[in-house]
Image 1 (cartoon, protein in one colour):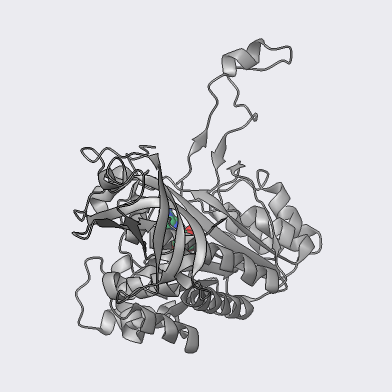
Image 2 (cartoon, protein in one colour; image 1 turned 180 degrees about the vertical axis):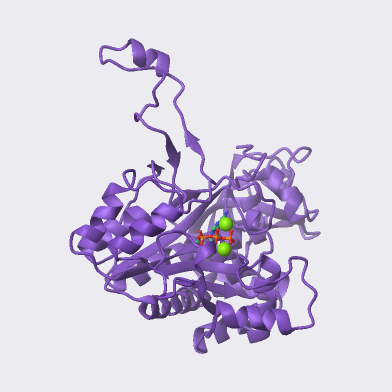
Length: 462
Ligand code: ATP
Ligand code: MG
Ligand code: MG
Ligand code: MG
């Protein structure tokens, strides 16, 4: 008898079929007719499979009738067309084997609905709920689609280091890397100065793989990195994590226009993909989490994105009636409330370009008057910024001056500067926060609920 996933069972059109399923009980209902209904879920789809367990089973009274939510079981039987409304198949059990009992007194996921905030206390169990299960399948699909998109577009998947000595963003949001056994290392045969860092210089967890990515784009032409990224930002917002996943393409011979086109076709592809491959989950989000989500995503896929320069955006923000908490004037870094207003204005994604050079990092290419940089942010309704990118400064003299102004020691970045010495080319790239893309796709309001184990200030329980 073949082990089948519940997703495959629910899709099967060859019926009847002898199958084995393995999963966790969601509910049990005993019928007056001397049999029981079990709703089983194995995480492969949103829906459960209904199992009809007849009273004739050997362990019917000793075990089946004692099953509670959370118990794990293996069921063998015949998959048949279901007479019940709203479900295609059901399983008539010939055997129900209990793998693991579940203490109903302490199991937190009883029938009662919990808030997402409450569920965060049980990061190890919350994936068994409908919403978190659906989020993780969507997250998986988006991740796979990201790889497919870049592979199809001729980008090489590059692994940039997690431990790094460079501060890409210059925002001081880095976690320091230390070692606990410096003393022991000092006593080993190799000379080691315990007052020194392990690597001989201070190192940090990466805040972005961009600088390293640029070096490889200067050789392989088109690369992308996709990995964990760390930022020690002491902000308790619904869109910031201390550990998140970022995908960062970098392409040689690309300018800002190419970069914007890439970002737009990239977002269109991953959202189209997730609607196609996670149809049931996406309908769930559309109904339960954010009404109208699917229609919104369809229009993202179909309609060209709106564009605006930072200067135009500031004009719009200063001439509207909205009262902002953070006052707007040319030169400020736009805040979430401003981004929200702008995306509402255009009712969809918006690509903002040409930000003031004073608020952006040293590596962005400056305009002739040096007032602005060739930066682009992609903003989406509800979330705000999901992509930040730019054309990079490829001119040696300008880069050195900008580094100097930013207080960076060019000797520390000699390797980065070298790229401008030896066959420099125009190039561009961007970073997308995976969690923000998941938030946007699902309508989930808090970023803590779209990553398996959220890391935020004061919170790294497990
Ligand atoms: P924000 O303005 O929201 O703080 P940022 O401008 O600092 O973002 P970038 O340095 O441009 O972020 O990083 C590129 C992308 O990485 C962002 O557009 C966003 O999608 C994502 N991102 C940045 N910081 C975080 C974070 N702390 N948690 C989750 N995603 C993040
Ligand atoms: Mg930030
Ligand atoms: Mg920003
Ligand atoms: Mg940004």
